[in-house]
Image (cartoon, rainbow, N blue to C red; front, side, top):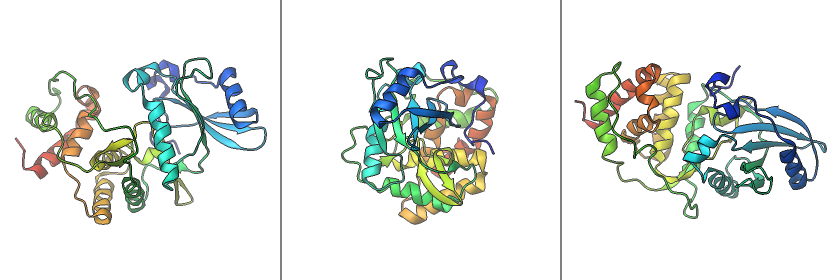
Length: 300
């Protein structure tokens, strides 16, 4: 079964279509881990970085993440440092996250200028339609971590973009009203440890047991609602609306915190121009915007 987040090769940036682990990087791994690399396998699901599973001569397995797509680093230059800090906090807090083995967040030590992160291997695979109760439990455990020491704060993606015209294939009034709500800014929130790309594609399972959460490049101190809304959007695509609603209900039941519908709107607009320009994205987002506006009592 393919990874739920797997993109067609043609849709990936050129730097990620045929990725390898160069000799200089293998040598860096040898120096850091104390054994040479004898096997490399590209791992599925990554769309912003190159991710490989490594086998070392002494039998150990690791995961190597290289920030080899310049476009991502241009938008998020601190992402490598942010991921290291998040993984250290997650490990220290007892979360099921990869442990940092070694990191070169500038690429200077390797010598090619590409940031690289060597992590422990977690067993399991991503499942598009997982146990939503367990999914809610694990994200609630992330949000319960004291993140006061984390030096990375939430900010709105694409908040500085020019106003875009509503998509011709959509209901103009819905998009205009939703954009007004988003532009007004978020409701008050309690800063928590948030993954910010939490969805089934970044949660691993083995024989029905949840084994870990990966891909922490966007983690920060911020609103829990952004994690819930982003996960719901992906659940709708992969498991259906009922699963997304059940996930929300489970989270609210576990935490006693109501999910604010503003974050459903924010999760659409924080996808950037693609939410307007891709017909499939428009068709998927518009019912969510309508439902969120209805819940806010703000339908046009």
